Image (tube, rainbow, N blue to C red; front, top):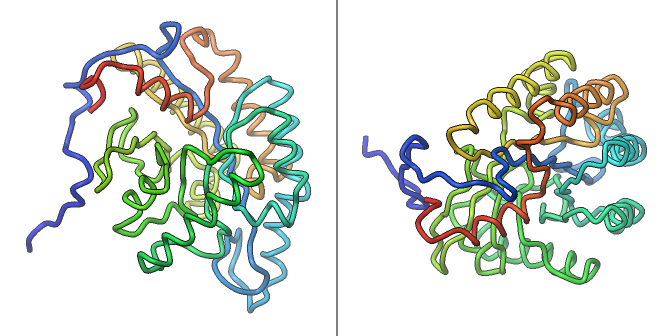
Amino acid sequence: MRVKTHNRYAYSPISERADYDWPDGKRLAVYFALNIEHFSFGEGLGHTPTQPGTPPDVRNYSWRDYGLRVGIWRIFDLFDELELPACHLMNTAVYDYAPQIPARIRTRGDEFIGHGRTNSEEQAACSEYEERLLIGETTETLRRHEGQAPGGWMGPWISESVHTPDLLKEAGYRYLLDWCADDQPFWMTTRSGPILSVPYHIEINDSPAQLTRRHTADDFTRMVTAHFDEQLRQSSKQPLVFSLALHTFVSGQPYRLAGLRDILRYIVNHPDADKVWFTRPGAIYDHIVSLPEGVVP
């Protein structure tokens, strides 16, 4: 069998890369990514904490809707309480369904990241033409509501076709979060020039951890804090990125919210928190492009 390659980036061992700092000499960039997703009733893809039911599957649809009606507001309050920035991977269907949510994000001054129209669909199933339309529609909707296009993209279901990085670059995107291949940002090749991959840790993500792998809320707390501790330790050798991916209908459930509060307080009150840069992916991109050419692979 001939092994195929994506031709998006070359292999680069982290042990051979140049050293650099984050702003103010920080060593670990930390960002929190809240997935804000809305689903079509009775059709298409959908998360579930249990067995899928016969459509319209009211049990699982309403469980997801809890995240937008209740869970997200508790998470917003928790971020406010701890004075933490966040980025929001938001389906544009949320603008019509729950406009109070993007209004709260604007009040917080957080970053919007493109995340498709709805998580009832995934772009890998699209033709190149259909995917271009999906990205264009999503981008224009965000631009119309927020006054500017988003700089970053995460595909619904972290889904990509073979054309996605090319289409994103051509649509004006500067970075993407889909490629969970590293602890540092790295440049990817597209047919229109480079696009930056910003780390997004699929292991430290409440949905696959607690819905797919069936870890408990206490398991997840231990996983995330251990991940943070080890990355902070390793960041003495290389600047690293820690991301925590959350979903409104997962971490917004009360018993999981209690675990999230423990995680965030642990990070904020860590004895070495002075080495941490609490930030958003857009600011990570801005810092990377300020470095001398060749520092970042």
